Length: 263
Image 1 (cartoon, one colour):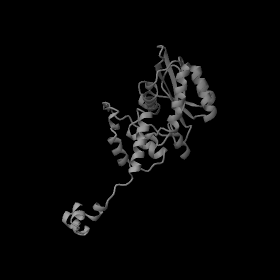
Image 2 (tube, rainbow, N blue to C red; image 1 turned 90 degrees about the vertical axis):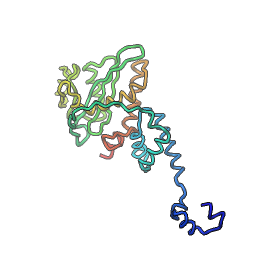
Image 3 (cartoon, one colour; image 1 turned 135 degrees about the vertical axis):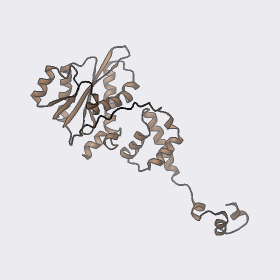
């Protein structure tokens, strides 16, 4: 207040004349250093993960890095940096609610598996075989090749079982690789139940469908693959990041590996 300096009046009288409180007069902005740190992290995350919105950035800072900043404060800085303008919202089609899948109570109760397609820069078709654990949505494996017949699917599952343990059940669609006699005999021999969804009912395999959408959005659509080996390398790197660093809102905003540790 200028009158306090120029006219030599008391601060108390200045409060009364101006109608402001002592708290307001003596307030000094704090935590500007923290604001700079928040801005640094937001810029770093959005540059490294161009498909991440505010939600994933905030969950990463809170649950992976352990910062306790309030989400309103972080979002204010996020908007001031105009990072909210990076991702254009998509039009959403209104559909009937399909209901929720049961969530397993422990690891290795139910795994879900599915295929995805893409292509190399040469134009050759590329296929991926994806497997997740429904319990913590952990990506257990991504197998990449030009062709993935039933025997290759069995080999990939055997490799996962070697380090992860055997699942009680496998959920899949009715693709030719899954209904093949070779896979059925393997499952019977291993005493693993095959759960087939109804034809055309992809919502019955919603966990792997959601994983596939994330893989498409954050991995496949962001790279051009020069060879199968190149695609497999990038798949392995992305899967580690997905399991250990990427927050997953379906399991409480923590990465799958962290959810597995906390039970």
